[in-house]
Length: 298
Image (cartoon, rainbow, N blue to C red; front, side, top):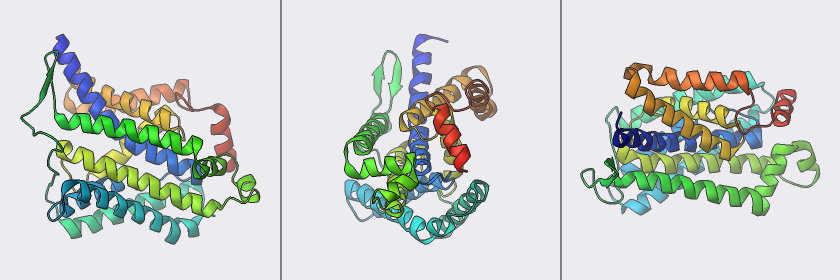
């Protein structure tokens, strides 16, 4: 493998890994505030992309993307209020089954609303032939949008959780829901906010990846599985760990194609995940205390 080929594989892995990181962050946000593993997170990514494609037919692209993100964020908040808030007493296993069923329902609704056609947004800048050359590797201009969006989203999320009153309240709900409630924090609203934030973040990711990966009604399932793997690998509930886990999964998939048939791509990524979990069950950046607290809570 030449240096330029290795760089091309690395850039491809980082791009795909950034997509997985967005989904993984959504998993972590909701898990932190509610203890729910939301396997419908991938459908938020799909809905964001496919809604933006539809709106771009009669709105400027920036407005179409913004409207799609707000719409999907509203859907996420509405799902929490109308469905998950009523199911709080169910076990973790029941909630996993419910979210998987919800993802199937959303996927089928999207099929009826948008059919099976593959769609995509236009490149935000440039086009598919205006690639940037770097050390012999070709970089699509949309890749910079993907990487920039993930970097900005992670930074803003960190600032929100650490320095804003709402973010601190959300972290308090994660650390000790009962104490947060006694301190006057509206834990129900925090859960709704976490669902809306994770849905909006997933929708934004779906918009920026649409020109690269295309958008189709059934793309959410694969993204949810890879995003969940990234979240577990980095340490469930840790947004920074979700980013690292996403990048590892993306790079593993990308480089595996250079030595193995493409059919083994998924198996390679999950083999790394299983290896890490055998050695460090709470993930790379997760803590044993947090994992133990969640197990005791469940």
